[in-house]
Image 1 (tube, helix red, strand yellow):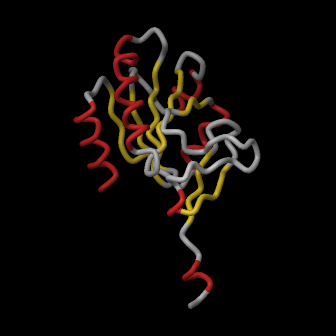
Image 2 (cartoon, helix red, strand yellow):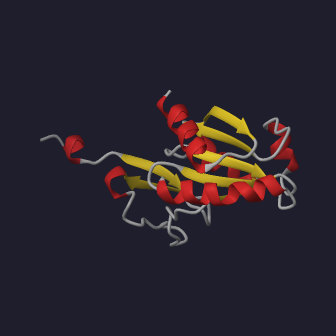
Image 3 (cartoon, helix red, strand yellow):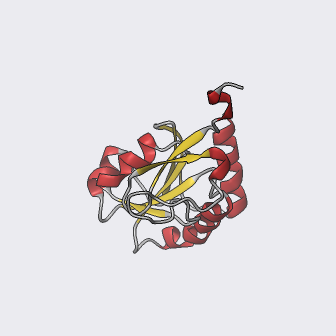
Length: 152
């Protein structure tokens, strides 16, 4: 057997604490991997808060698809979406990273991405935006949208 055949495929995952990229064997994603730099758990099953400085590491360089919620604390519909996103983050923890960008704290990032209303969800895969939707979604329609976008 060749050495490459014995080496499991790995995925780059951005640490939610220090934003360092961590290489995790694909078959170990569910084993609570930790960051070599800061020792934080890399896959938490919770949405990761992003800022303008951490956004590109997570969306452009991570090997997992990243669903980003653009929201604001004063936004009622955004608060209504939070439990759905928490559930998606937990249920898809090894196949998708869920992230949140507070548009009040990161207006330049919201402007760069053309965010016109909140909540807006953008799905990134391999560094590219692959789907976008605005407004509140229940868990089932959000799951169907994610399935369709990730299957395309």
